[in-house]
Length: 287
Image (cartoon, rainbow, N blue to C red; front, side):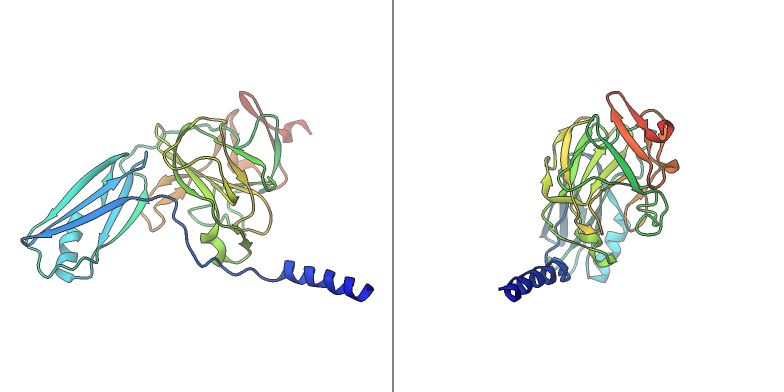
């Protein structure tokens, strides 16, 4: 009997410790619309931005002649909730295998400074577990000014700004330590149209989004449940402010300033922040 119990316990330990496989399916945070019509040597490409944020479109085709024509168009930026039709004349040997990629934001939008709320409920206090420009994951242009809060699974995340939801992924379940897990985080992206800034809330619980793409949100509104998905070794919220740039990621991290003048750049591992209605409190000053 004791041997059976021991075998059962060891089996559970083995199952819990066995490495998780990377997800076989990748989910996208938003969708867009594109269609093409070829008639009498004329190609019409119709593209539509369904988001409440600017969207940059890049169009590719594996025909050298047409590819050169598309290069003259370069990047197409559509304003929120808008569409356009591109017309290319004298097209030869067209095959319907056009590829499109997109990036959030407009490079023409002037970015304005913004003070934001802490991304959790009033009265709650959380510690920083990873600050700016740190070795594990906050060391790239995309994440250098991000902050990690020690929120537990199913802790409530609140919007730090007013804005619109422009991206949601919440169908992943597992996490891992290696860089290969980076694309498999659950997250929400919210666009604040006045400043031009995007806020991202990352490592959400499976099915942890409380909003959907297209929703309008307000500061302090409950938007998600924290978790541990993607590249992560512990439960937490990865919080990042981003602006559009001309690189492969399309966005770069910028310094965070919370209400009350608390600068994210000065926060270190172990610092505690408490949210009180109307402002943020830096617990370091009251220890």
